Length: 400
Image (cartoon, rainbow, N blue to C red):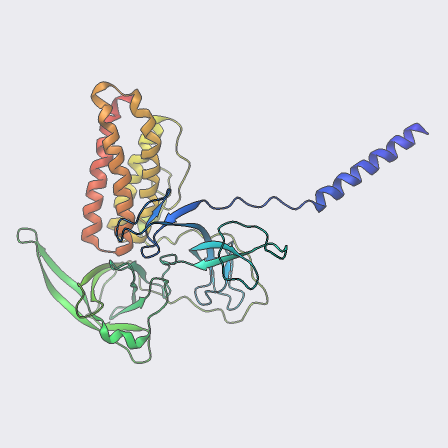
């Protein structure tokens, strides 16, 4: 009887363990870290308390989370890639603020917890200024230097250029506000480096279109790839801003699904669209738009730093300014990883820490310049970035 009893006890033990595992809730995913930001300048993000470099107000804490949002129904926000449950459009990547609330309370909490009635706080995602830089009409999306206006240039056919204007949340401005905007699109110009003067040879006024959320110009027939510049003044007393667009092909409006889905359809995360030849995997095997782990060896770090620097240049040459931040930030992370190795260099190379700091600083500037879309500005920053990378490679050259 003992073997039978032992077997019964074993079966009971296994059943108890299985039941316990089924009843144990899965571990909650780790929370995104708390960052410090400015309430008036949300592009300011720091890792520790301080003051805003622009308005000098104290920075406030925020949790930022990557999510997926419907381009039409912004209330639909999901954790993973997929399709909008209301219209079926593909969800787009955005950055949101993550907080927790209690029922019948508007108080925002940065931590999950328990409400006064014993119920758990509910998780809330809130759209964030500058959190959505996705083109909505198949064009190229830039942020204006005023940190509020955003715009999208669209080239749907050889003779048409359109300019959509949005606020800092990526919401289309009302057509009535277009009367304050003065804009034109330049399709041909020359630049004299001696006098630093630009002469426009072919320019077309951008005018509001009745009952349409954009400005439009009928231009001279273009050939692809087409390069053109929008010069925009958002009100009469503001500075005119320049936005350089490169269209490798005609812009295509995202097609709306013909039928509403009955439920969300899961899909794997989509890779960023390759709009230029530079977006293809380089000969090094590294995709410019895909961050990878930093090599553990110093020689590996230096080789990847050089590759990333060249990838930034390729993206700029192709006009893909919105993607520049990916290889630039990878280079930044490599520079930070190289800092501990400075102590192992010879006495004559110990000043390598200064160009490493310049790589980090210019990588952030490349990100900002890429958002604005001014080719002259981003090329100037890229020159400084390249000089910093070259100095790092020279300083570490004897250790590779």
